[in-house]
Length: 129
Figure 1 (cartoon, one colour):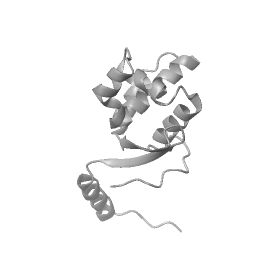
Figure 2: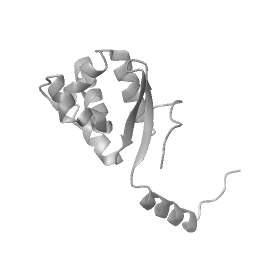
Figure 3: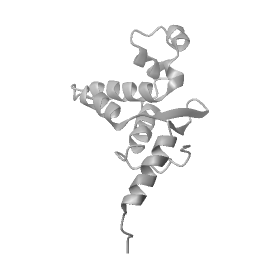
C-alpha cells in the first residue's frame, strides 16, 4: 500500500529542489567513446523546443532532436566547437560531432526526454543533485 503524501513531505521536497540548482546526468556515447554531460532544464524550456517543431516530417523531427540535444549539452554550446565545424546554426553542430550517426543522436534525444518522464530510459542512473 502506498503511503499518503503530507504537506510536510511536499514542503521538504520543495526545500530540497531549492538546494539543487542544477541536475546533471551523463550520457554514454559510443560514437564519442565516453560520457557527455547533460544538464536538465526546466520542463517549460523543453516544451518550447518541442512546440517549435512545427515540421512533422522526419527531417523536422531530427532538427528538433538536434535543438534538444544542443540546449541540454553545455559542451556543444561552445563557440570554438561551432567555429571548428563551420555550422550555420549553433544546433547544427550536433550532427558532425556525432559523426552523422542518426541512431546515436536519437538515443541521446530519447535519454534527454527520459529525464522528464517522456521516454522510458533505463540508462538514467547517473543524475547528480
